[in-house]
Length: 338
Ligand code: PBG
Image (cartoon, rainbow, N blue to C red; front, top):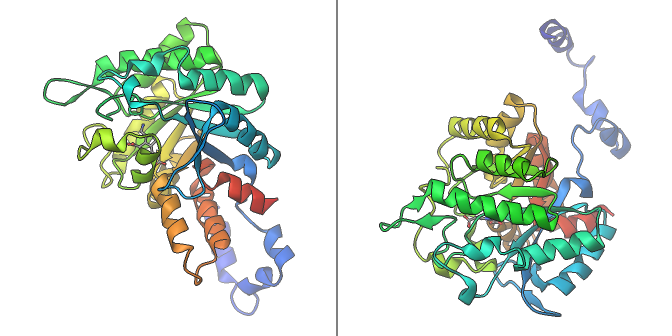
């Protein structure tokens, strides 16, 4: 391999002209190393209680919260564009929120009902369900707190397990713990096996950073107000760290994860790429709400071509090693690609 590289690099101008292969569009397509198709895109969707409801999310222009009936209509549209997977997130009313987020494992809760109805109507759609307590807790944290406000790990895992089982029972294809508690993959995998959900897939948010890019999402699920000025730095990762991400992936794989997620995406391409090189597994990336908003905001400027910018951004995430990308742009990009 090395020898070959040397021989090639011995060629030089004019024997070798790199521009030869860039001479026209078809030639460029022929040698393209990375592609982007609707199959690589996962649409995050927000669900609310009620009937025939569609609410705009001001901090995520173009993205809505839907009641289940309207969400089903939207799902039909995005499937017709070639999208094959969605990720569901609930916004529940404040009166259902508690210290321990017990609504998260209500078998007839909003998300559980939503999963059942979607899988009933669209059995081939891949439903990814979020396992974390933040949309359900009165304090907006992803776990339960002790008296001093510290997020308790093992106690939280016990609740996450119940939440995960309720999703599997409802028919979720991919259960995605996004909470960053230690050992939760092991606890959930064992629970799924015990309950005979042998094919339930676990997508672990292995490398989830305590990021400043999550603001609009927290508005969307209504955890921003509950969280107030608090942060999630005792469980989500410090953005200065990279080797720690590899350790997290290593642990999650040994605990039973099938897929791992890096989040956010664009500022963390190095993390995606390192994981992809170190482990022979599918890596997903979450192009998060702040990343989406950043492009939407800059696209108002006529100097920017939004479509071209988004395609470049998402292709770069694929090039770094992501099999699939969760992005609020999924539907729009699928329209462009069609
Ligand atoms: C937390 C969770 C977050 C997102 C999805 N699930 C972040 C957080 O509040 O810490 C963010 C996704 C986005 O910004 O698009 N369980």
